[in-house]
View 1 (spheres, helix red, strand yellow):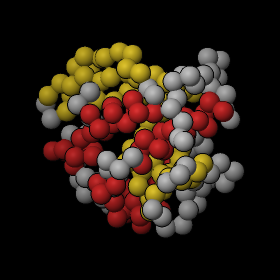
View 2: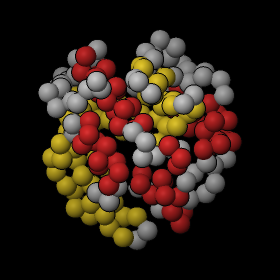
View 3: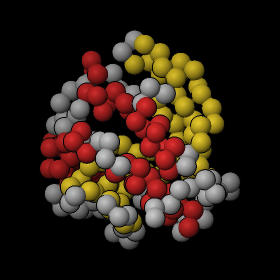
View 4: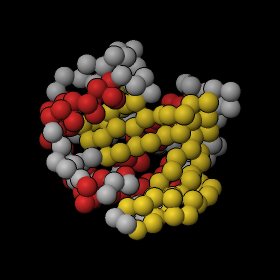
Length: 184
């Protein structure tokens, strides 16, 4: 269970951002470790191993004990996670990271909606002024999703990620409250 039971549950039209609940370890284990999804996160597919129950539990525990992390649920199932990190209260900014783990639910707008509802929460409830994210430039699906939310590409770090012995660029994207495209 979540170490932060007071963490807000954030609801969108089709997604729920929530803390850990019973059954999440088994749900994370069932999602496995897709080589293609892990590559989009920057992992070397050649080094990828099947997920173990212990690894699934560690993943759930890490999200359950981080007060700035939410599991993403859609269609009643765990599909990924989103979290804030490097929060700077003086400058009212944070980084945001998202990961969908369900291959069958990719490309259906769940990641976009999760980012929209969390960004709205960050700007409205937490009163932050800026969100930043970084994404591998070849992850075109993620880049498109961020842009749908309103993120603007602000920079490129050339050859910043070595994946499968090939250098890849990272894109740096930023979102201000005035950029956010809210759900209608």
